[in-house]
Amino acid sequence: MIKEIIAAINEGQNFLITSHVRLDGDALGSELAVYLMLHDLGKKAVIYNQDSTPEHYRFLPAARNIVHTPGDLEHYDAAFVLDCSELERIGDQAEKLSKIKKLINIDHHISNGGFCDIKLIDAQASSTGELIYRLMKEMSINMTKDICTNLYAAILTDTGGFRYSNTRHGALWAAATLVEKGADPQWISENIYESDPPAKLKLLAKTMETLSLDLKMKVGSLVVTHKMLQEAGASMEHTDGFVDIPRAVQGIEISILYSQLNGNGFKLSLRSKGQVNVEKVAKKFGGGGHINAAACRIEGDIESIKIKIMEAIKEL
Image 1 (cartoon, rainbow, N blue to C red):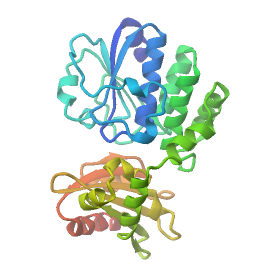
Image 2 (tube, rainbow, N blue to C red):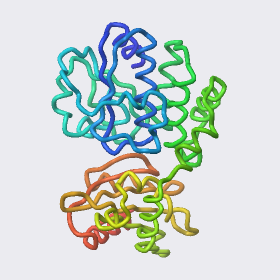
Image 3 (cartoon, rainbow, N blue to C red):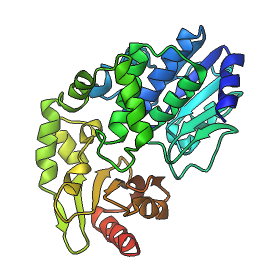
Image 4 (cartoon, helix red, strand yellow):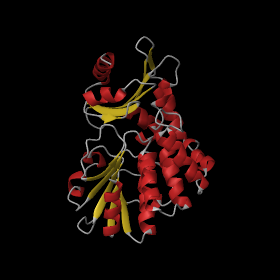
């Protein structure tokens, strides 16, 4: 499929680049790397995201060029839909963007059923950033420092700082090459992991009061509500990394972060250790992801949702 993507790039002149709501490092790093590549090739490109860029990713090269209104879609020759297992993940503009002449999907989620004719999907890849690295290598792209910084950030974050089970040979090989060509691991890591605003720490303190540990079921969880966000002066982007906290407890194999939605319900972020497949749990509720990292949304109050999710985990 890489050859089809290369052909679409060569044939087109105007490109839209987008990714999922609630942006993470892989989505942003991948988008920005593709954006810089296309500009270096003499193409025109626009990055559209429904959500604003989280504060700790605004240091990434070209991040200031991201827009939040897609504009006139008729003049785009193709759209890159990155790090999305389904088109609806990009948000409110999904139906409009589906009308663009060519959709190119690059993704690594196991739940991706292949919604684009032109696609590069590999559930064994650590990240979408790793797949874009493969694409650029195939194209013999000049890997500038800015491109390498973005791709390194993508791989770094989706491997949990090279700690998760998706940290395989390909991810480490790509990261090593990106460092060789200019990515600065210390500077990137400090910006992403060591630049939290006070509001995040205040929110974490409130969230830790909800810590629940079921050592028999080997499940730990945290809850974030709208009230907590308001009291801490924080936003939902400040919950980044919270889901990993219960998983760090000895004896806990599954970690869940319940984040209250604007409607009636919660978004669930799930993480696991070893071969415990939380993607199967998320899939029961219309979600998806990877074996060790998945998400879904469930309507209802927090107590009824917890009962439902624990019943699903028991079935594992």
